[in-house]
Image (cartoon, rainbow, N blue to C red; front, side):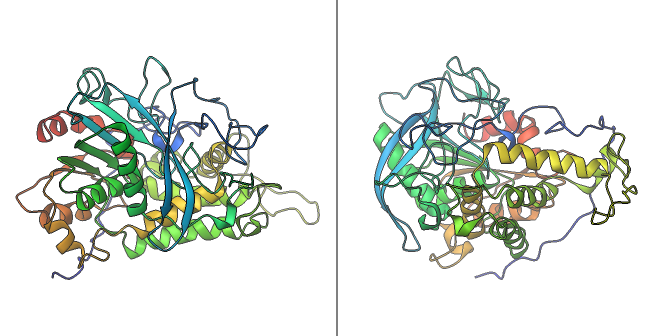
Length: 431
């Protein structure tokens, strides 16, 4: 067995052209990314009278709810989680495009990122822009005229699948009682969904970041079921640094005075902690070069970062830098659409990611992969270094290439610029 690789930090290139300085755009090309997708309300169940239609604490936001019938649900039954937790009933929400063929083998599963949802791309039923719009649709790399595409909402989240804000048989939110979820748990539940839909084989499973972790876990857990997979901007196991970033975000929420041990659904939500977690995460999603180019040390609007007031007890600095305003904006947007407990569940699931756990290590686990891989990394990613993608390529049997997304913004480039690799992915995975 090989020893764990040592990741090398690289200097980030500055972009060749400047971007417009703004505090409201979510990506370099203005497209709404997965991490910025609106609240997707479940279609049934939950507490009457609660906004969002089915999960305690769900809240409406600027984007509104989904059109009726777009978000489907599947009762996956009871489930025993990997670490010992148990739920008597699990619902999985999902969205589909295209039609399943008679053989049941033209299926493609797309897995969302940490705070993402099921809305990968627009459709006739829901024309709103999705988070991977350039990859999915008629005539696109994932051609919905050819493939039956399923995008499930991961268990533990807040976009229709069972999570902490879901209610038990007595109508009480699970809250602090919700089990610890691993990436492997999520994949096993998604397999139940595909079985119920009549899928006999996955032609391809695709995901980026946390979605990439799920895609790789699919390939390792179900080698006889998965024919191909694409992993964007993710490694075979979360590193110590990635776990450290996750822990700081989790603790930001847990230390909010309104967290109440996770049972806050009848009171005030821990939005300050969620906002702080979002700020920490968002810095890791971008690059120093992009932040410096967009914001530098400029003040926000008419604010003075060196200004203050003469009132006793006031904070000594009343004004913000532009980059502070940008992070405040990102935090406020997430607070409108995401449940703090769900954030903890997703973050800890990603911290748990390790395809080698219980399988003799990463090398042994990847040696058993039989599906065709498509591996992609963002050249400026400082959260998931390209070397981690190379490790996967080196350990899967055969000779495999790591494809590079060129982007000055860092990790989020897997969302904003994945179309760069659309043709290459289509060719490699016979899409």
